[in-house]
Length: 399
Image (cartoon, rainbow, N blue to C red; front, top):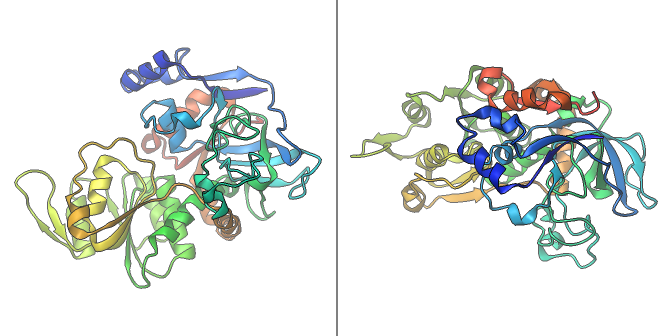
């Protein structure tokens, strides 16, 4: 079968990191860490595993960070190569092991990607898995499959950017018939955003600030409106199509990410800005909870500046090594800065149910679909969402 693989290579990684930003075609050249290869379908690792044929598989920001070598090396000990990308997946079950009871052949399913203790066949669960925090499993290098924190980063499971992957039955969640494939492929990132909203705990009648309205920002807006208390919701969005999506999904105020952004934010939040001798202004007051859905140095800095004293900053986007972040506001305001990485199984089930209810709102976020053979164009669409006007780009592996 055809699959888009990541190939570990120090020279290719260094070329992508230090040359690719100037010569972008390197990402899709023969010297890239990515290749479209003919590979054997992965074998079922055990009797509770099933084979899934991906219908749609999304391109995530973490995938792009890996391909462009712009992310951190933090996770490198917890992957095994060569792996097939793709952890945002809606697919059809086409084969089941002898002990699978949760799904049947023909079921349409969404994939919960963490490869935790039970998935790995480890009988004595780690402390995190016993507590239900399966996304933080300590045993991500043990058990019946190779190292990998998630499907899509493990050489033995395959991934959604292919014609076939394997998953433990605990990872598979039936998708209601009324949910479109487009909304279903967003269930995994939507579950992550629901988890972020839970972590944020915006007070009733409070103010929430969302920085960034790409896919994660848009889904955080949807999650706030679907499961959070009624609050004033202010969103900063860069591109016109992102601003339109933010309004459609329930933002009360949408601010452009231009030169006047800080002044506009100050006006909406009722904060006072004080000029400094060097750098951005200092602010007093701000949102009760800020959700940073980009996690760049600039947005992390702004998140802390525009959150009120003793408020919370939830880092939803995947950060890297962020130089230039002034942490003084965190210290002075006694901010609670929290990460939000993935979701647990109850939250994923909530995401499945809410996605069915919000199908008409979520499905349009998937704006471009590509067969695997057109993967260079797909990556360009995802890397340049401002130019493409696309929120989420997805592969149609079977086409």
